[in-house]
Image 1 (tube, protein in one colour):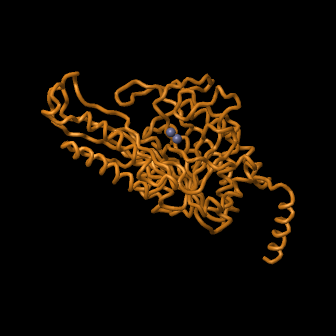
Image 2 (cartoon, rainbow, N blue to C red):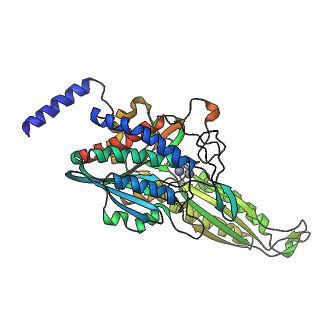
Image 3 (cartoon, rainbow, N blue to C red):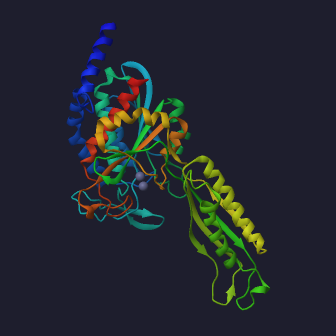
Length: 427
Ligand SMILES: [Zn+2]
Ligand SMILES: [Zn+2]
């Protein structure tokens, strides 16, 4: 034991002088040998995308792979979710790695030999289906990491939980799904991880990793405001209560919440009215107006405050005109917050993988249901660059032109593998 300690110390000193390799050679060799398969899986998923809660083919391929690796595999969680448990040969903590599986109702416009031709019905419409958010990459990367880690099962000091989750983009109307449902169905109750890691491909240079402590992706809640006035002739507004003017005041009033009411030095927030509906013709002031919109924040406290203030602002502006406003806020995904201690602890790991290509992520105003896992146990969610060198090929996630440069794939496999190994051995 003592001897081993001394040898390890010596080795650490030697390594510290030289550049540290991302992964020990034996592990890197395993990564290298699984990469052709990772590329193949990714292209296959890309060509056969499935919408949320409909990832039947996709989850079948994943489950088969995890079973072939000798894991305990559970399927059919939250409709199509798959969880694989890899118990290492040595005792230790539990680390969870998560990938999402769903595609989007987007018609692919990228000229690829494995471009999606898939069409389906969505909300009663015939639509194209595409992995326009890049979840095909997430799955292939995690399947690759699963191969690497399963190959070193005996040496693992703890347990790795592989989470393949459906419906990150939201379940179809009238259905539940995603991370929230996987947790409700008990995946963390059965085996509670000590940490959870996830990644998202992002249009920053291929192979760059971006991460930040604390609030990283926004909470996303939607609201409906129904302004009730009193219908009258367009030429005699005094004979009724004009809900269109009241709604206009509310739109402007809502913008003073982020700019005048919430502390602009601590955390940004967004209030967006996305639709206003009311009225039929030019000379009738209608009875009511309905507005819908979205709220984005980066911490739980601001989220609560913004809900209270949207309600108060709408109700009291309406009251000032003798109208009423009914405000409904429906909760979407919580803030995706990276545990500061965990994020700091894993920084050297990511640095070993990408060196100076590790950057601090900006705040992302989009939302992610990884937040549900990270609200349960310490979590870290990071971004993996997939942008091509050619700027004409760089498009945002959800674009029909979204393109992922496959040079990012080995970086993703290395990162997920290294995070799991380092977390397990650090506890
Ligand atoms: Zn997306
Ligand atoms: Zn996504």
